[in-house]
Length: 208
Image 1 (tube, rainbow, N blue to C red):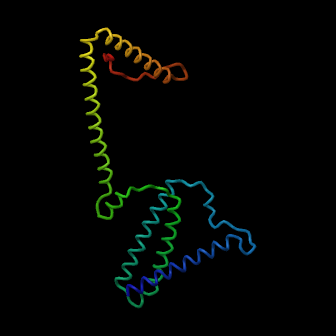
Image 2: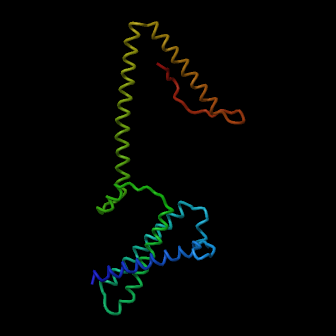
Image 3: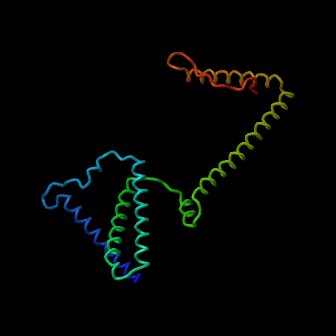
């Protein structure tokens, strides 16, 4: 019985593909007729959000048709022959529609999300894992930055004891560079009316 249903399903799919190819041939002007557009909405500007909603609606409709098909097959009898064929034909048509809609919707889905769905897990676990990984890497990077700052401070203290004049000149150069960078930042953030966007900064910090 199941093998027979699959044969009917494949047969309906082949007929649907043949019909679509014939319609394409008629629209291409092969018989000397002018080609006419099959869908007036194809020339419209595609909206990514609208395309995504159409794919979601088509997917939900396909799942509903599969559920109806399951109910029909589970309680199959002679009277269910016609409804079964109708639902098979409707499923093939909706699958073709979903494929056409998906061509207008370009969304990259990580393979890990699909694996979680196949395993029956919540796909939000992938997002949580990515955030936890970012937090861990941020902590490692912050630790390295703090270590370099501590090393720099220690080197300046050691150099100041041995070369006090050179370290003083270095501090002056650093202060001048910081003031110049601050002046450039303020000039770039000036408003058309002459006002300046003032960004709150920590006071009392002295460049080393």
